[in-house]
Length: 114
Length: 108
Image (cartoon, rainbow over all chains, first blue to last red; front, top):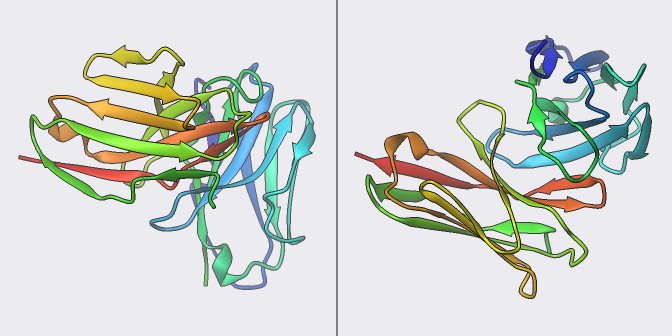
């Protein structure tokens, strides 16, 4: 596709369930970033990938959060045993290279934990 | 101190007004600076990069002061369509740090 694609666009889950969020970056973009944005708040960095490796995962809020990227392309963010405070919009972005170029964002995955 | 700080806002201005946003950053090693725009319930999109010499794109002017670690965005002749949240973004190594954003409402 032409842009960054994220799925699902909306996810409602019950507290304690696991969720997987998917990001398909722009073809050829080597860097991929995950952020989350709570209602009315700024973007909170979670993790970024350069190729398949994650040089900086310092933003993951707890060990319930994990992410992987395979084939230098699609990335999956997994949240285990979801809590209500995990409710947010999870935004994925990609760029040609890490650190210097424009970030292209997907439309986000809105997660609601009941 | 937050890594990137912005005017708290919101800014409510009439059409045609000139409005300026300020941003400060704490990491003196940062090399790349940007302004992004985020419409309500939408993803952020790049408005403009910020260069050391300052740069202009139509009604928008961005300036960088490395010594003061300060970035600004000036919008002239504001339009209703400029209403959005403006995000200051600074690189941290290979990562990007976003400011909390300043919301602008341009009123008819």
